[in-house]
Image (cartoon, rainbow, N blue to C red; front, side, top):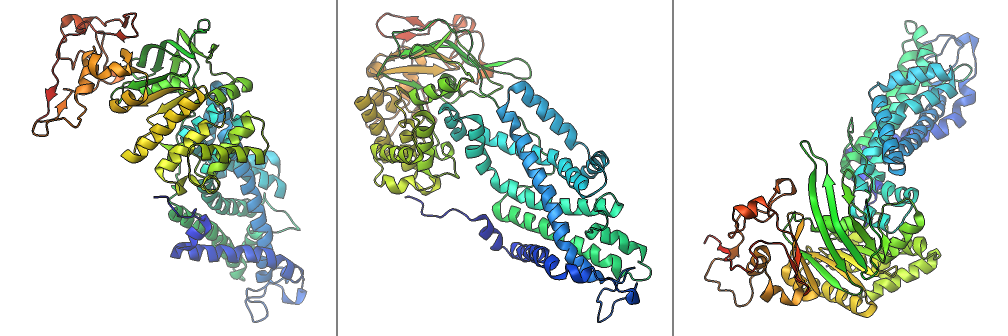
Length: 632
């Protein structure tokens, strides 16, 4: 069922809680006073009356007067606008500088990104007020120097927050899809990263405004902030201390104003954090991510749409690097559907991500040949190359909810590809997006285009994801578990849709799935992977009858059908799938294979081609094997 829930309004979410309502009212009162009081009371607050010098509280002067006979309460009220305004100005510097510095590692190369991260970490190690005092000395005494000092001193902490939030979003599928589509780095941050970290940034901005107010008042109190004839709460507090024994209210009233305003900002920020489920950390530790690069490619293979030779994906580890994909080689012809099947951890998705240039650092991709349409696939900074790849290669991820940007409407996300790759104007791109949603058989494409991802059902989101891939004119569709978490009826519809697209446009497809039945019914050829290697390559039509590798035969046998005897335990494959770090020198399946001997455990079999469209890597080819039964 399609969700009809509306997008949450963050401000209404805050007002629905008692603490949020109180904090909002208090903050509203402070801001209202900051706007009205300076206009209403400034002239009265500056009136001097030598006959009323240093008087205590009275009916005429509720908080008494200062050394020049000026009304203390009116001066505190009139200073509200200046005090709050300066704090907000300093906060603006913090936010702008923090966002720019925090997202910088996503814009620059890895080495520069590490340097930026190290500088942020070093700066965060110093207390904020100490940094403010340091910069105040550099920029000089006065209002402008204090604003710059507080603003710059607050940038490192906000940059650390932005950096870690950005890194967590940068690893999401919809960001990978945008990168594959050729979206520029700056636009990627503005359109896909920042909108999805907006709520925690706004919450911390509110809290930071309270901190800036307190810090600015502190600098003015010390005499290095606002100077005469201007005044803010910190300066009034400083002047009030001189006559505190004559009239305590001269120091108490500005002190109360500082506390109330600071509490208003902080309470509002904390109430927003609780209402929106945002965590407000004191320290952040994160890392940046980068796309990896392919290496050592040979010349183009003109006979295949996609040609892969000795593809490897390696990740660093404490003892030694882990090779998750180990020398995978295969070709995909124009219009051919190739399936990759195997258990979790076999390396299926990593193989697809490496082909699509979406493996993130610290992963390293290398290949003797990695070519698409006769061109080498490399992670380059060439925008033209990225745009070409984004239109010719479409990737459908297994979780469409994670593949779409939650803060953008479906139509806008599809239209962005038309604008980036096809040079379409905004309206024409949106029209093409609606047409593509119609092509993938969404019943009301115009309405769906104006909905957010959470308003569509799982099947509709998956169709929209396919529509996004069709915004260009792809010659290859990489579908990574496209029917995960969908019910059987919707799975059938999605698979039929992919088959119809392939038949109508002659598009090749690389389909990844755990379900061997899906692979058999949809694909022309099957690659069986285990432990990061291909153990068998055979036509899909021969999967049930002519599989030769013990692992492939075991996968076929454990799939129940209508003739399975329900009185007997279901067959299983003994043991657990080997992780990439556990693969030894011999056959990857030896630990679970009932036919394995010492030769299998000590020597890895090569993937041999029988020149009849089949390849198999096994020393015991065609030897009968029986799958173990499950315990009753």
